[in-house]
Image (cartoon, one colour):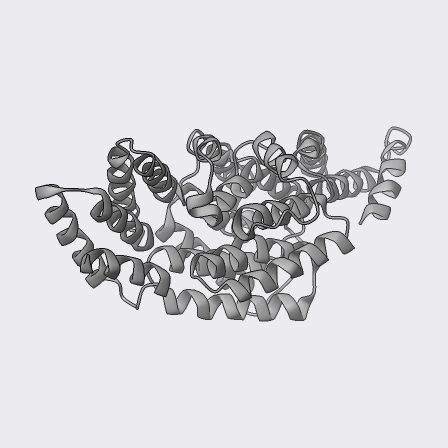
Length: 382
């Protein structure tokens, strides 16, 4: 991909000379945006976004809706990567209004991804189902995905993550297994990085399946290194540091600095969730200050727990997390927040917290993740 990027940079310099060939311009600008997104870290976002915008304008003038959709999809992916979920949502529906039914299959795929991060779990699952049906249950490929994510893999990843958060634990890991098998079969570098970073490592790690989490994190390092995908290498380094106490041969302070300088977005949010009790307050506060929706109850809980362990009253954060998790129908986050509240409440408030925790445990349609179930039952037994 690095070699391809250098060639595209040379070709892009000649766009002014080929003014009579708009199709070549659209192809070059779209390819530049896609490769820049994956090859570089956050510093490549602005130029990639500009190139996607120019490609979308040129494709629309040509009447080439498929290429316009691809460019707009790339813009949405960058907004999502920056944690600008409201901006992505606005763009998604403007694309549909502008391009009509032709854009529908791409729209529901992008909307599934963004709805997940916004914390609209049921909506995300519904859009993911629609995306699978719109393209056919077995259809693969990245033709209208601006940053080269596999479309079927992306939909399956959203389904697995939302099932996990909403309490369908067995279903979540069944879908995850299907997702990982397909990703291995396809062996597409960018798609592999996505499903491992956003799906496999966070889900296995949070469920206490550390050997599997480590296996896929090593795979992420290998794919990112082999293909010079710096963006995904940054994800892997952050996971190593905060989830496995292994700085992957780099200075721990440098990795922390990279993570904080990268701003809000999925990388920061997933790293904070993986870090758990080890998440520093500055990382939690940065994630909370953004638009994180999918894990906001867990971020509130981690901050409240950290403050309580420092001897400060963090219970207001635990309560905020529980209230939001109830609104989101996020049973996993409800269970975690209620467990922490039961641990730190006293007197009548503790009795109320115990009742709430027992009610949440009974609400799970499938057995909760073992780590979370054990934590809850230990607190109740105490």
